[in-house]
Length: 486
Image (tube, rainbow, N blue to C red; front, side, top):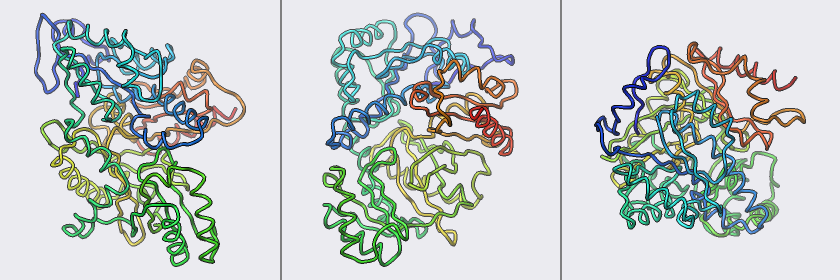
């Protein structure tokens, strides 16, 4: 990913140098004439889980799901926090005040926002159908030698857009995507059944590579029988659709949640699964319920990696995840001491092993491995997100704002969906004013970063907090909550 030029100690860019020299990804430079490259970012979250969304039978519920995904678009700007200039294609217009806040905070000199005239949920198709945007992208190739396209996820629709642009004579580079022939890796390894298969194969090589005991099934009736049997024997069970989204498609049943009688238990599970038609459409994973050890990264350690175009697997960070009792991801806590040293070493080693398999099979781009820290020190692989993750924007923002050594010099925490208390709905301007005493300072390298304006309409706050240590970060978070409770 392109890195910004060095900044002056005052935090201002060296503009004179910037105008004369354009830095190319990988360190190469081009002086004068046609500019080397234009980065184009596409926020295509709904495309990543389109088969899942498409299986939602209720049209209103389906549209609501697409709308919720749209509202995460402005948060994705922080995945681009290190970039100096770029084009951002989003399914929804962005709040101009939020855009200015982002640009000033991350010292972005120039950013263009494009919005297709129609949004179906498949934004790459919407781009192709939008003559003005397509013309804009083609015209860019006259100013720049090539376009560098990145996206939230490498989907068939994204690859189709790349083909379309190339057919129009545009030189397109996809630094964070596999080639089309290898794109099967995205859905396969990003599915519950795919990562389970990979883990079982490699578990024969590495004894500590394991997942919670479980099976991959199909059909509601058979899956309900397996789940009921496991629940009665073990006092708990987890049921997952092959590739869910934002907590949907994961059911966690603990002791007392279901009847103890097999037939009654099976019947209740069937009734629950029949409420959503995606359970019948996709494979279902039924696995043992693991009680997480909250002392180890909140019970849910995680490590994120980037596989470069040359196949190198690079560790970006490890962290503890903030996960609700229902298994819904909320945010991350990143610091070198966020996990015990032995756990950090184990999950990164396993991540490299899995990443090397991904790379061998042709995957390129971001991925993470979610783990569950069980009792007696057992670490289980839970799932893998083969795309930009819920922590990518946190990492990129932390690198830009706190520096590349932030894991040793700062404590970073995030929340992607904090419920704002009370009845008041804040505008972004009102929230900025309210949080003024806590906002991130580049001089102090501490403070609150608001990462979405869109979510405020849903009375939710997405944020990142950077502190000099864990105590400071948690204190800033508590002060933020107190301000919201006034």
